[in-house]
Structure formats: C-alpha cells, structure tokens
Image 1 (cartoon, rainbow, N blue to C red):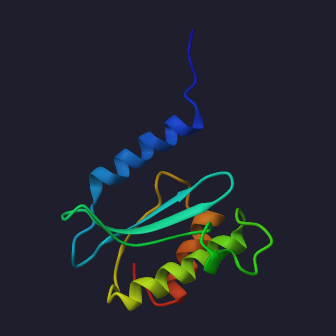
Image 2 (spheres, rainbow, N blue to C red; image 1 turned 90 degrees about the vertical axis):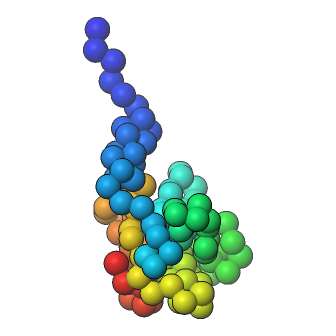
Image 3 (cartoon, one colour; image 1 turned 180 degrees about the vertical axis):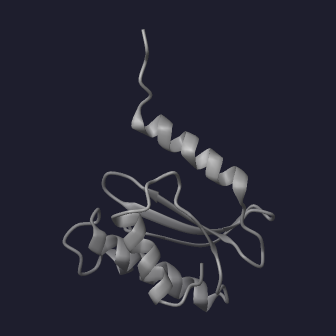
Amino acid sequence: MIKKQSRAEVRVKKHMKIRNRFSGTAERPRLAVFRSNNHMYAQIIDDTAQNTLVAASTLQKEVKDGLAKTNNVEAASKLGEVIAKKALEKGINTVVFDRGGFIYQGKVKALADAAREAGLQF
C-alpha cells in the first residue's frame, strides 16, 4: 500500500533542499518566510552567526493596523513593506530569499514583491 505524504511533510522536505543550496551571511543575510493558516512571519537571519537580525509578522500591531484579515495577499504585501523598512534601518540592503518550501505565488510572491518595491534587493 502506498502512503501519500502530507503537504506539510512535502513542504519541509522542499525547504531542506532549498536550505542546502544557500545560507545567509553577514553581507547577505537570508529573508525567511513562513505562513500559517492565520498569519505570516518574516525574518532576516545571519546563518553564520546564527542570529536573527530583523523579524516581523502579521501578529504585530504596526502590520495588523488597517487590515481586515491577516492571512491574505494584502497582509502579505504590508508585511513585506514592514520587513524591508526595518532591514533598511539596520543597514541591510541585499538578502537571499528563502521561500520556506512554499510555492512562489500568492502570498509569498506578494511579500517578495512588496519587499523589493520598498528597497530590498534579491
């Protein structure tokens, strides 16, 4: 009998393959994205020092204000703007984008596009 893997297991496996290909450095940290059913989270991570430099999520008041829902494309683009603004304040201009095993469409794409428009390069 063939057992089908759950979508979460497939996503984690994809994420590990992606993480084996690149990692964040001090010069070019990694922008890691995670989305749950209700919220989105974004972190900028220096993997060599094992340090989170900047973090933002739809749970934060500055992101949540003015949004009807926290799990749609509009919330993702707002999160992208906020994470880019925080990164630029810390002097981080270029990052490596880690989509976390999620397909690059919808919310993940909206977050990436908004971060690019706000000034991050990747």
